[in-house]
Length: 408
Image (cartoon, rainbow, N blue to C red; front, top):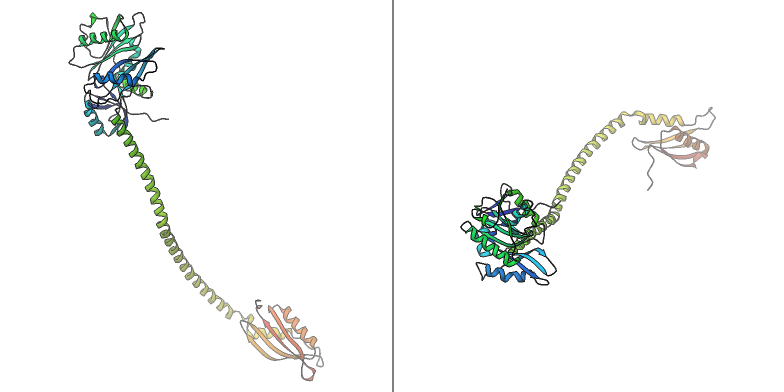
């Protein structure tokens, strides 16, 4: 949904808005008709309305040497040409308005006539009497009386009457201007809105008073006209340049803010990431050292426990192993039977036992080896021999280990 545009009016020497105060930013400015140079102009088919109206308005301007930014709004169009409402804002007569806008930090996007917004708001009360084609409308505000002569609802004369002006004389001049512009027609009525002293105007036509439009309705009329690109816009060129420059600066500031944010992000990545990485690395190193310290403490405790278990475990003591080996020796059935004799013994608690011996037969040696393996005490039993010795005895060496050696 589009954001509603701010409407401000310069009346009574000050900026006014419907809200509590005029907000800084962009706004549409509505001015009293007395601030503008206004004229109804006929434009032939193919002619440029601005080119036709510019010399006409320049002749009416109180500052003839000042270039005018002329705007034209078409109010009627036929095959022969168009009737346009031409207007311009002399910048030399708007210094106080510019100062007020600068003080309020308001940038003007369009300039319209406040009386046209009021006329739009009162249009339903003006009535439509087509038997008499001409009527005169007087709209009173703080700054002036806005006068419109309407022919079949088409303006044929527009004038601003100041408070010190002669109302009867201005009405007469306006009717003469309308007759010169659109021909002679009877005046059906004079419609008055606001506190206008209409004494003596009954001589021209009956006077009918209507209820004035509220400020909210007038501002709504200006807002509705601002949405139409074909409506009047008397924004001076110098003010338009200021607006474009302000918009450019705002876009530049926004771009610089975005660029600054991106630059700051890049700098943060370039310099912040290594710092953060270093902090994380230091943190991980601290955790690693703490873990290593705890690991060493647990390992030391485990070694102590294993040491206690080792010396508390008598199942692998020298006597228990000697008894286990002796129990696996093949026992002779009688005194004449073959036997095995062990003649050397080397016991290491952590590793195992190594011993040598002699047997009457090689079969006894292999039987002895198998018995050692079946005992389940040793993880590995290695036999060297048997080999023939003195007296045809079979010599052998057996290496029994509690843990099997790892293969390289």
